[in-house]
Length: 239
Image 1 (tube, rainbow, N blue to C red):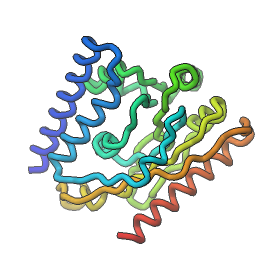
Image 2: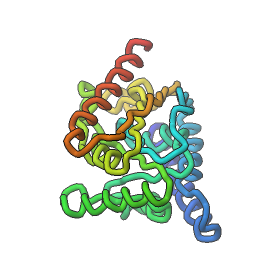
Image 3: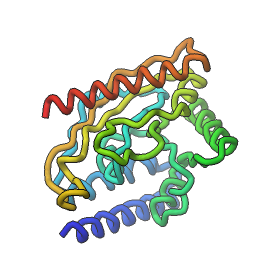
């Protein structure tokens, strides 16, 4: 059963991405990222019989900002898809550009691809993101851990600094977004099965960057990380 669900989820994601690309071809002004993320959320979570509950969505500013979220698995596509707002671009690893359907949708949506293994190219990618943030009045979505966590014992990996350099350079706020652990929905090492349930997401209060400079990046990153860890602790305590 679980493999059938995985196949159906993959097929739905491909369909949603292809449909979004076709819409973009005929209606160039379409907010591709917004619509594709909503379609993926509805299909993926519907197939898994999982509901996503978002707390404090109104805490996301209407003005440009940098959204940072914890990264757990491929399910992030569906879970966070419910609450990605209009005019939001994603910073994604370069390898995703070559993934059929998903990579096409990311590229046509104007998202920014980062070469994580070559610093000069990574910095160039962040410059592109900074330009979009300033000139397009958009939001930028980043997973600051850089990769999904591999151990259940690690709640949040150390943060890479790119998101915080970006927010300070643009003088826009950082908005932390935290999804609770998905372990009650899926645990591959035990039963290799999906379970129905509810996944909670919490939008934390924006963290201002006005007046901060390059010397404040490390402190800002750690401040945001601690806020996100605190939210994860609250989720765990609430059960």
